[in-house]
Length: 213
Image 1: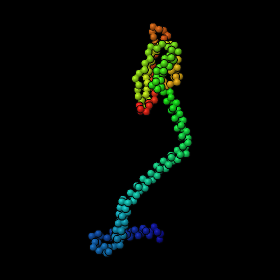
Image 2: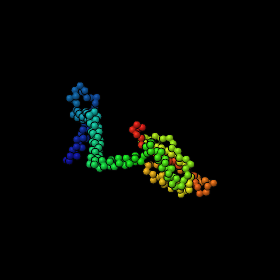
Image 3: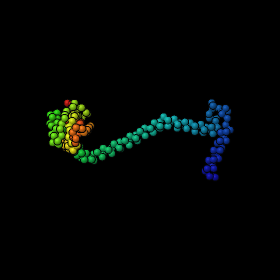
Image 4: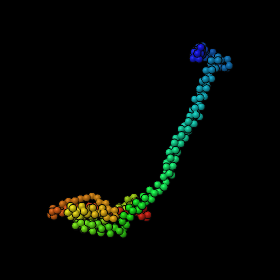
C-alpha cells in the first residue's frame, strides 16, 4: 500500500469518526472521556489559533521591523556609495571649487561699484559718439535689488544710421563691464532720410556688499 493511499484511508476513517460524534452527547465535565478524534480536532484548532495570535501579536511586528531595517540598510548603502565617491574624488572637487571661485571672482570684478557707474556712463556715451550716433538722452534709473546683486537700469535714446546703431550695440557688448541690452525700439525719422531713432534699456549690475545682504 502506498503512502498516499494510507493517508487517504486515514483521513476517510477520521471523517467517518467525526460524523458519528454528536456534540450534545459529549461530557463537558469530563473531557478525558471524549473520543480521540475530537481531542485531535480540538488540539489542531488550538494550535491553529495559537499560530494566528502569535503571528498577529509578535511575528507580524517583527516582520515589519525587519522590513524597516532592510529599507534603512538600502538607504545607508546608497549614502555610503555617495560618500565613498565624494571621498575618492575629493581632490577633483576641490579643484573644481577653486576654478568656480576664480570664475565668480572674475565675474564680480566686471560688476561696477557705485563709484564706477559714472565712468560706465561715459564709456557708453563715448562708444555711441565714436560710432557716429547723436544722444538725445542717457539717464540712470532707480536701482532694483535682486537676491545677490543690484540691477542698475539705464535709459538710452540715440539717433543714427542703421549701420551705426548696430556698431553701437556691438561696442556696448565689448565693454569691460557687464552691460546687457533690453527692450529695443527702432523707428525711422521721416524728416531725416536714412536716420533712425533707437530707444533701448541697458542694464548693468553690481554685487551686494555684506551690509546690503
